[in-house]
Image (tube, rainbow, N blue to C red; front, side, top):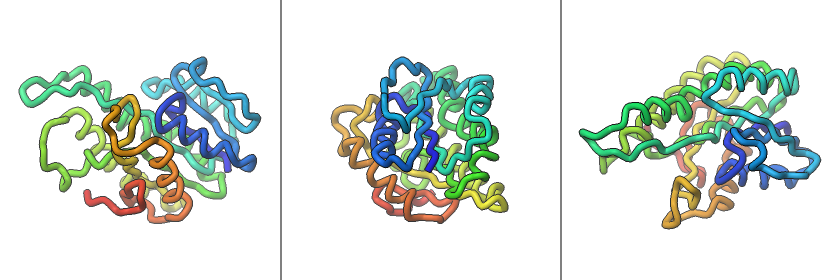
Length: 221
């Protein structure tokens, strides 16, 4: 498979690279804002510069890969944004978080849709969060992050409808609470366990527009 991963220089993105690169049948396009941070020497991995807030960067990436089919496009790049509570929300942080977490997966999908449609697997996976589930929100707060993930969930569902005629499957994946820079040291999962689970969901499901946890359980909206 040809697999393109955003936010590939650390955390879940780097773990996706490490797991998928183990098969010589996979070709990995590892994308991140600062390529010098990602030193990988495997022949089946190439590193590409991608700032997901830049449409120009997205178009440059498209030029680099040209018409190469992309079996699996993983939108992993994401930020938490400000943690301000009600009455204190940082609007600039909110707008930047929406650019990265919500708008970027849609715009990059638009730019690379022909590459995905030309592949065999034809799959787009968006790494979202259960914190974007409205029915699961019992604690309030986290306005910036929650809204960005609720919004990208809607993006994924709409894309699943719009891209169905091209045979493209769109998955929304909750990685769990993972020990990354974002998740912190108290998290319940290591990146390896989370990504192993998400890879299994990617491998086994064709339920386009569905929202799955890393362990294969469906999540309510």
